[in-house]
Length: 552
Length: 79
Image 1 (tube, one colour):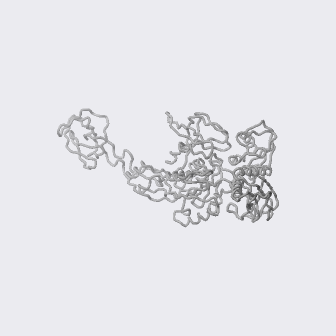
Image 2 (cartoon, helix red, strand yellow):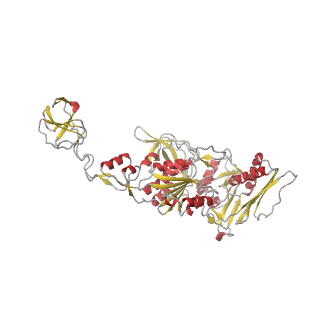
Image 3 (cartoon, each protein chain N blue to C red):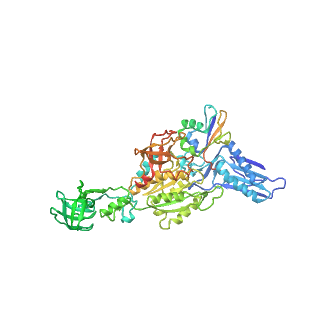
């Protein structure tokens, strides 16, 4: 196959002569890539292309030769212009000659895909004012790569500072599970509200020395019949029933021999077997503090205290979009180059764990199409305009198709940070728009998992008035093997409890942020400082307990 | 050894290229350690940057030696 490759600073001619010789070619297919007036949602007047000349040429040739094995063609001509290229001008020309059009078109399509992955050429948008000034300053200011990365602590501080509690609502107990209590609830009365028996047995005067008693009355659990006992008298009581008066004790029935209406005490116990009024909680004492997450036990306590409509956090509304043309639903067989979408169910499940409603959708990997799709959806109820939290999976890096940041800006979000000096999960974007927050989550499942548990959870904690993620101290159960990384790491781990109550953390194997295998086992994230490298067995570490955090 | 920077990495390092003292033949990780010491700002880019040696992408088996031309290749966007 004849190959001709040019990198040039000059405009590409309107007409290019086909490389056709020998009379074998039945097709000459041409493609021109033209500079558009918009890049990442920003109006531009030109694109500035930069190339690693020596390598770009070699890599282009290597790609073409590889593709020609699959798609036999006769000749290829590639011209890529570099430098500043005004809107409307041709940036790349590719012509392919082949016996039939099918091979030529296939090779052309394959080449453009590979070019955008591997050929070392870069472009930046040039806005009108900068055009022809030849400056590098801020020409790509909308790209996350130009922002300095936040540390994990800085990122958490930003999120907490900007995610303030949403107005509280009153919810019935059946709807309140998992919500954050937003008022301190005090006991309206003593608990228990009366002296009650803790045994099935017989109530007698506490200081009555008699051995035999006559049974004069019976109290069932719901009975309320005060009665002054005399020496030698006993009242049959059931567990939980109100005692007939004060100054009593209960002899459990196992220690009594009963004959008709007479009982004889076979054995005296030390315990009075009474739960005294106010023993659990005194009237007016706080039962639950504002900020606690309501679990089953807390709801039972609220019910006991007669608080049937506690003031709680509103149920959050989340909208989650996946991006990436490579994704197929879990029930489909991925074609080469495709992967099954695991992030949708991951995010849905995590949000549901945090009592948030979630609407999900998929965005095309094209900024204009994505914008029009969101524009249509926002007219529907429960869509993006009403969402408290917007999550976009993928598209958070700096690749050409990664439009999350401009998309969020288009939706009115101010970007607070777009990188965290964290592994995995560096290209994490956080934006705010009034009380609404948005995250651009790196597309890899493990990055998703990590970013959700520290960043999204912190935001949800703030919006609901809860505590959010809290790092605890534990001990490594095994050596954590790692190369020193300039970034802080949140390392997936399995938490167990040592015999002395120590949190023991077993590091899980993961090689890159696309790893899914460790997600099922991970219930903690171990924090490894930057430049640390391996951490010895038994070393003390900070960790984020995931299940406990969800209950916090 | 000469190390080249492109696109946003030039803004991070403030230069297009740098001469590094000739190390013994070293793996990518060792090269990165030297680079990060000199340009800590590269740390944030490392996961998305590929190394190239003498105009070819490096892999885990690649060793970098004195006379090599090394390039840091951030995500490309040609076409």
